Length: 210
Image (cartoon, rainbow, N blue to C red; front, side):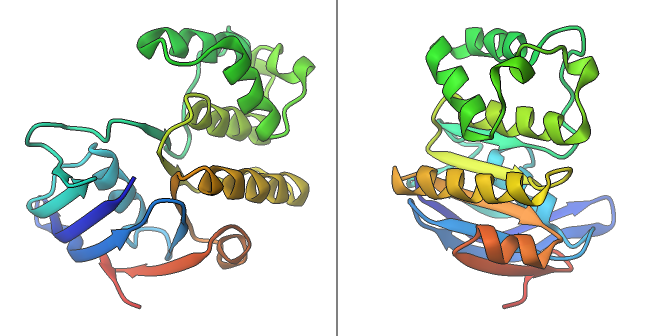
């Protein structure tokens, strides 16, 4: 899935959170958005996901501008920082419930997503209330993966992950890119971005600065 940003600007009240952003993301590639907290990384992720409507400019998905005929990319997996899941359900029960919305993913697809993020069967059968920060993060990433999206957007994906889990994520993202998925991830950790991304884009003040 190709994504083209044309002069995307977003103002919230009197604050410009995205400033004249133009860029083209190609399918089968892993892009990292680098920048300090508040630089505009998350706003850009939200704009690409269709969750934020630009004040000016366009987000174009495979030639189709968002918020005209379509409001969201047709095949997308997203993690937003601090995703909340019902705590009285297990990880597996959470994703099974989500799978009933689109009816695209099988139980095997869900279990495969857990395996891709390094979650064991006993972990996905544990109630979310007992999850550590790292396990909740893995569940969030599995949620983004299980329907095999053509566009994968990850906001601070290594939050709570140890080094082994981060390296497992790198392997998973490479696999996703190899099957043609466009992967865009945002992080304030430069070392993680170097490990996970093929191209790093620096964001500051809501603008691309490299």
